[in-house]
Image (cartoon, rainbow, N blue to C red; front, side):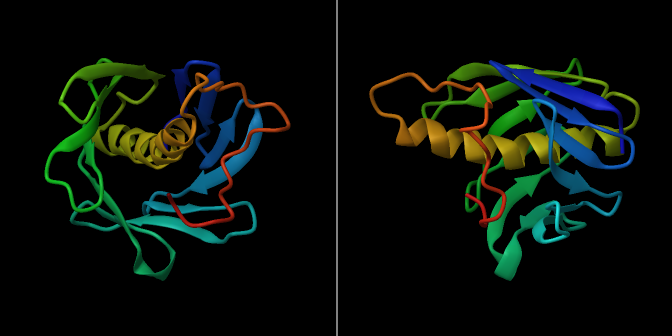
Length: 156
């Protein structure tokens, strides 16, 4: 697992070599070399299958990833890309490219890069859901005591 950081808006996502994932300094998730993502109480959040499919609790389909790209459940086209440079690009419904932050530290190996893509996809699903719930006011990405990703519930 790489030591890496994704910065997007007011968010800083840190991945530690021991698999701990911090969101703005708060330990939120864990990931292991087998592609298993789990919560603080070891509850399953997602599993990266060998063919790139991501499944959640109860075998819920959470999408598919490769090293650089991730697609939403049931979609053939990527909804986001983590470029080799670390730049994260999200694609709007019409295909327009939108900046979605940048990763640092994902370029050590293809497996490390895929770990960053997996984390971007899972957290990105939650960010996307929060944005879609916000209809009039812009999304505030500051993770104070009132925000939180709600990892106790299945995605998205």
